[in-house]
View 1 (cartoon, rainbow, N blue to C red):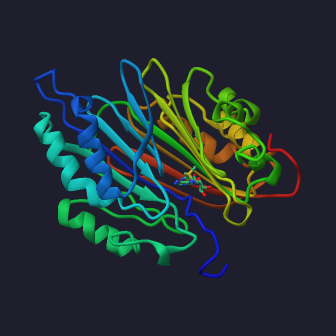
View 2 (cartoon, rainbow, N blue to C red):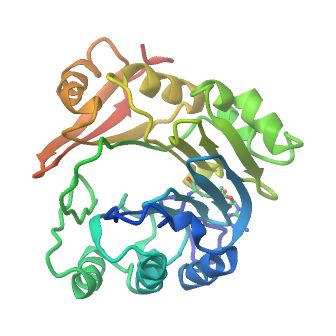
Length: 324
Ligand SMILES: C[S@@+](CC[C@H](N)C(=O)[O-])C[C@H]1O[C@@H](n2cnc3c(N)ncnc32)[C@H](O)[C@@H]1O
């Protein structure tokens, strides 16, 4: 691809922060005003384009992906050439104004970029990102998994799990739904593609970009979320799926996501702490998943952190039409 051709970096940078609960039960990150979030996001170079909420979680669709705000947890997932690490100081200041002075966990991770040279500081590479985080959190740790993944990690206690499925080389027909030439609205794209059937309990807020591209947030009454972001352009197609729904086994969910988008290759990461339902079953998944399926596992790594387990697995299509 030459430098002038249209290109969009779908791979997201994912930042998740948990603040320590205080004795003052009125403290809540959701008290932060919309104009303050807009200011935080100006450091990231993205904007709010849609908003939904329930009693437990606020969900923002952004010009580049999503932000989720719960009482003491904040998640920012942004793609393109955004700079999420640059908003950390402002975020920490706002959290402190709202009664949260101690960070219990901070995780930052991303897939490797197709065009790392197009990123801007401090996201020009693994070392630069780690150095930037080190200036704010000198006791963090960094890891590179497979082709490029980093995590900074502290200790925690509440049940927590996150599964991400990051897909590339997607089926052209499956992707054609996410183009305004073929589909008139975001809700039509959501139902034709089958996205609304992946986790039916989710209340969906979706957005179809012009001329193509799709983002959705889903939230349920338990305060759980799912989020899907789609870059359908054939030369650099990319779809990300993420949720924190608690399950004892993620195999069926993974299969449904894969059958919905039909990638040529994908990465699964499951991150679960010791209180999570997923913690014990990660090992099972790691043994079972590629058996009887049409996917060849090309890489796998398991990390045991002090309070979290991380499973990272990469798969390539192995010849037939569907995985089982
Ligand atoms: C849906 S957004 C989010 C990307 C996401 N991280 C992913 O998984 O691919 C990216 C897609 O929307 C398209 N798009 C159209 N207008 C856009 C805008 N104003 N900002 C960001 N993306 C836009 C891009 O070309 C791309 O196909």
